[in-house]
Image 1 (tube, rainbow, N blue to C red):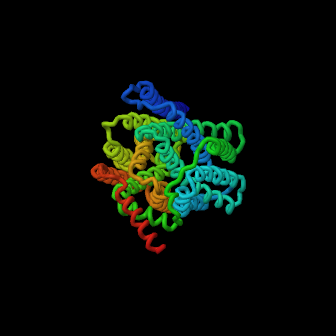
Image 2: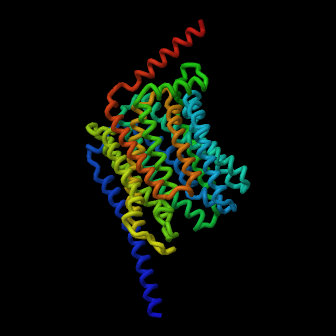
Image 3: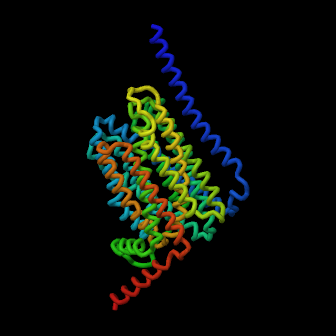
Length: 478
């Protein structure tokens, strides 16, 4: 009896200790984020105009609503499919369909956005994602597959059309280029940080507290998307890519491909983005089994909120860096990629340095605690990455084919994620994390090269290409 009580007391103390650890990590991150935001000096701020602030706030409202529609769905997609009785293999096929759809159709819708209008593409995103949400009410596999395909198309639009519209509209209204980094950093701070946390809490309220079922977050997402679409229709103006020339889709694809092949800066930027985002999406699938290899009891929702808080920390740091003219984004991102590479190497290192536990259940292990700190570091790097890569894209990608080229960048990313999903049970988790670490270190090397050649004019090759195409068209007419 005494031995039983001793073991029970030890486990209870261990659980309390681990809960305290989670609260300490979350509280520490919250304190640092608050301190950074409250301690900003004039050097950390960019002086802007009231007209720009009005424009920025309108975009941030729309972007936050769009991201709320996306974040509400994320934690419950797998759970919903499982509640309909589908197994891991069938669910994996649904996820592969989503990424495959983004790869196959993303470039087409990106080109259409450049040609038919970015505002129209943003509205299409809302409609497509709302339809995807509606399909979640059906337990039929074919209907769910259609929903995943629609979701893949919507994802391509989310990560290309909105940014393309913002950059074009920003310069059309005559705002300074440096002010663009203000919108980028705030969009990530809100959309990928605060909104993600609030969406997670709201989804938990709908499903667990109010017992509305696993489909309720998708209904809520559809409402937020509809509200955002109404704001877009009522307050946004249309802008285009290369609309002055009557080009078909094939010509647009060819032009974008030649721009990437002929301009080393664009090619490097695409490779860097694919390497980092491929590692990031792989991390999304792997962090849960990494922290609970023996089915340890971990608070998934709380850890997710902690990751988003770390991402907010990163975006707050990025805002300070981007506000300083003396700091080059191409320079500090080399360091960010190295740090992110080290942080994702931790699961592999701890498997060699820390004796693994074979006890089933219980609370998170010591190696799990170390990995959690490393994963928070990686999420902070993600928070720095998004506004920084947006800033570099605005500098190097030609306006005429911005959406098309941005979706070209997502092709290798989606191929990589589909391969990872297909082989998720075939490779040890330490190998997959090691692979991601190598990709991130490679990104730092490519970033160093981009920094070395970044001073060259960005549009020489694109201008020459346009002139050559114009000459060819004249000859064809003649």
